[in-house]
Amino acid sequence: MRTHKQKLFLLSDGESTAQLGKAFEKVLQSSCLKESLRGLRVLYSLRHTFITLQLLNGKSMVVIARQRGTSATIIEQHYSQMFADALSGVTFDKEESKALSKKTLNRRAKTAERDENRFKEWAEELRKRGCI
Image (cartoon, rainbow, N blue to C red; front, side, top):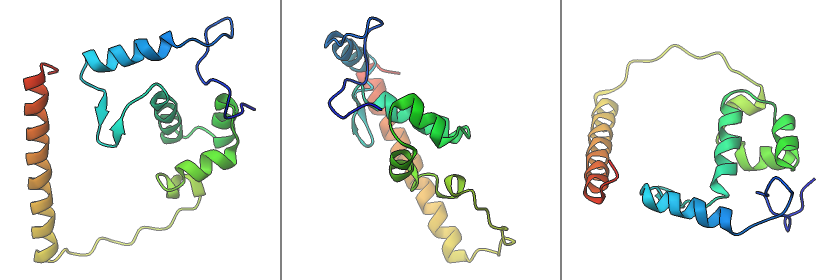
C-alpha cells in the first residue's frame, strides 16, 4: 500500500519528476481548464476523476483500492456521499411519482432558467478567452 509521502505519478523506471506536473499545468493553462467549479485542477485531480468514473461504471471498491494503493475503507469514506445508493448495495422500491405542486414546478423552472443563464455566462467567458 502507498504511504502519503510516496509520489502518486512515477516514470516508467519508478523515479519521480517535477516535469510531469509542470507539463500537466501547461496543458490545463493552454486549454483554459485550470479552474473548475470546485477550485484549481492539479495533477492529483486525475486520481479523483479515475476513481469517480470507475465507481460510476460499477467497479468494485476493493479493485479500485488495489489499483490506487489505498484501502476500500478510504475509498468508501471519500466517495460514499457521492454514490450512497450505489455503494451501499441497498436499493429501495421507488414510489410512484406524485403530482408536483405549482410552487414546486415554478421553483424548478426558476432553477432551470438560472442554470441556463449561468451556462451562457460561462460559455461567453470561455469564448472571450478563446477556449471554445
